[in-house]
Image 1: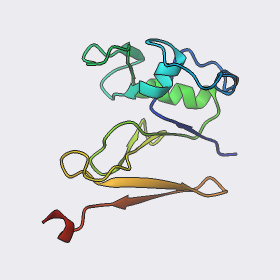
Image 2 (image 1 turned 180 degrees about the horizontal axis):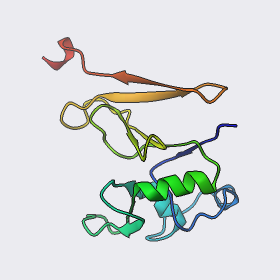
Image 3 (image 1 turned 30 degrees about the vertical axis):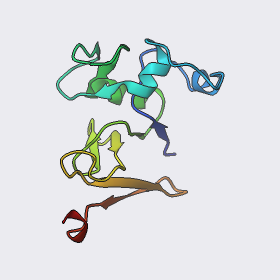
Image 4 (image 1 turned 90 degrees about the vertical axis):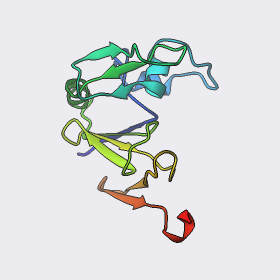
Amino acid sequence: MSRIFCVHSGISPMLVDFDQIRSLQRPLNVPKIGLIVDLLNAEPKSSIQGYVFNENSNSNINNLIFGENVVKQFCNDFAINLIIRGHENVKKGYAYFAEEKMLSIFSCLNYEDNNEAAVVEIYSNLEIQINTFRQSESSSM
């Protein structure tokens, strides 16, 4: 059976089961470190292994970056086929990571450098379809 995990940004070494997410008391304040901030801000980076704090972050929170090996291990540990995330501008509106185990979707057209936008449709059989949008020639004049 296929399973998809949708998250705002990333995964966390503090997540041991999905009950942790289900049991979060809402509304909530976002702390500077921990599970919640990781789910909201952690980002993938192909040049690293494991989890690393992002030293180049211009934020006052501790942002994690994580490598492909972490994504593959997470998918294996949680019996997930795909992680879908947002939070990050990607030029074509979508980008795969970790041998297509993670999909980044960015739906804001022309946010930066004429980027395209994308949305993903998830069907009842968990097949996905990515729809991309680009600025029309007439609207760019």
